[in-house]
Amino acid sequence: MHVFQPIPVDTMEFNPFESFGKDWALVSAGSKKKKNTMTVSWGGVGVLWGKNVAFIFIRDSRYTKEFLDAGEFFSISFMGKEYREALNYCGSHSGRNTDKVAEAGLTWNYKLSIPFIDEGSFVLLCHKLSAAKLTKDSFLSPEIAKWYADGDMHTMYIAEIIDLMAR
Image (tube, rainbow, N blue to C red; front, top):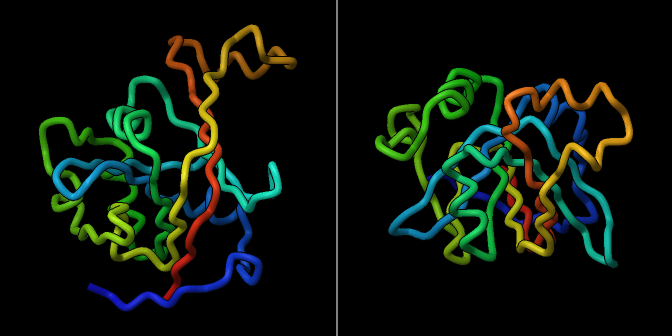
């Protein structure tokens, strides 16, 4: 296990365009007994309802969504570039029938009973505030529909950042 240092959220230096859009992250949810993780590249951070929040988008078909829907908490682990292959693996394999974290060469860790990926360079621990399913009739721009040709829609999760850990 690696040593993480707590960091006040308001001192976080973070470029969401790089961290989510280019570098990607792993979203993890569940308990010590049963959990899953998946790669995400759509999300961000900001302020909403007077709280520091993170938001992510998870497709209906993803196994991790079951854990997000069942629990109150999740984590977002941002990884160094040396973990790109592991991120690709976790984004293209299901954890339903295999231990994809071990197969990707990664390790589980926990804080406040929230699972996260120990190899992360920084980790957001999040408490869910809202889950909103996107629908085709909510799109204001027609080109968005191209992302949903197969009907596999996203749910947007908004969560308060309750802890930030970094190396």
